[in-house]
Image 1 (cartoon, one colour):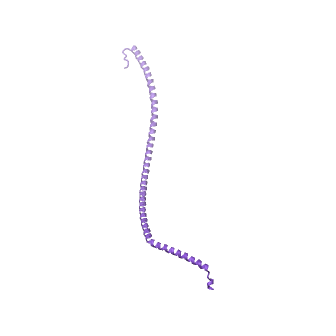
Image 2: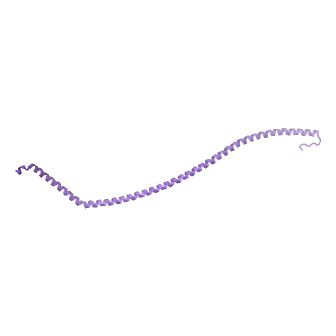
Image 3: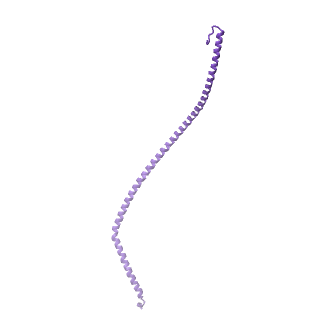
Length: 163
């Protein structure tokens, strides 16, 4: 009776499954054995890669530190140069202000000189007219004096003209 309760198909399936599982276990054991054999080599290679990576990282850190130092130095130089340029610009602005002030003063003096020149031209013109007038009047006075002296000579004996 117990034999009749055993399902042969189920046993066949379990047997096939057992064979498949046995093959899988053998394959897994083979892979684990291969991994155990290659682990020391892989570990050594990984350790070597870590050492190389750390060395590269240190070199890179040194490289960037140098670049940062150069940038800091360049920044300080630029700030100093910018300050000097600012001071120079302030000095130039002061010079321009002083030159502008001197220019304005000179312009005023030139304007006064030009006005004075115009006044002097007018004065010279009026002096020239007055001189012409004086020459003409002097000529008339001279003629009158000469006439008077001539007439005085005729009337008075011993009369000396011009004395």
